[in-house]
Image 1 (cartoon, rainbow, N blue to C red):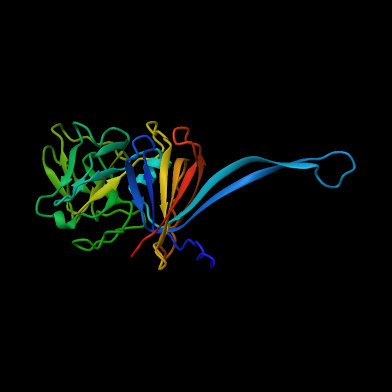
Image 2: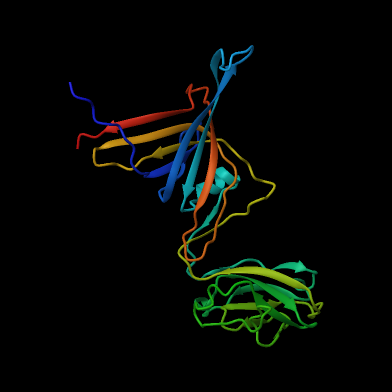
Length: 294
């Protein structure tokens, strides 16, 4: 009888995280550079007397670790590794703007200041993805600043007015119960009902999203984060010999997710997780191999 063909593993296809209680998936990642499962054990020698060698050696603890190198950031990673689920928003055919909120002082958003910031009807195509700051320049005027020019080519092209990232060439006058346009940004500020009385230097902030097909956001580091154990299925690439391989990690503990920004390169993150026993399934992980008939 000849030797069997060698059992090999080639490449990686995906990783899928799931709830270890319900077994329902959290999501999958397919742009994965590597998944390295290590089972490192300790050896405990018995030494004594004049012997240069141990009298006996016994096996100690085995630690199982999984190191992933990821090249995508699906939402489930934030939930499993950073303790916070991502909020996914539906398409916004007119774009959107968040609520104007006081940042320094209290006079900008007030009955004697600005009531709202809104998308200007008919100018939705000029909305630009950025965070914005509204600063009181006098008792009745404001300057507006943007935190990035990433999307300034959307709609009417814009540039910063100065090195402080101001986007209004001249200060905008806030008028009681009337709207004033932030030129070429698809936005307008509406004064509240009281006599306008801003305090110079006070600021308020908001974010804007252009017309989009989807968006998502998550706040990391909040007091509401919860970290739960999860299961993880690793699937190798299907090779030419048709031997498909999967490793089912029963219970995994992971924390932290680096997010890298590198010049002219896709972001890549390396994450190390620990595996531990699932008492119900009486194991740490299982390996499944199948040779397809065709």
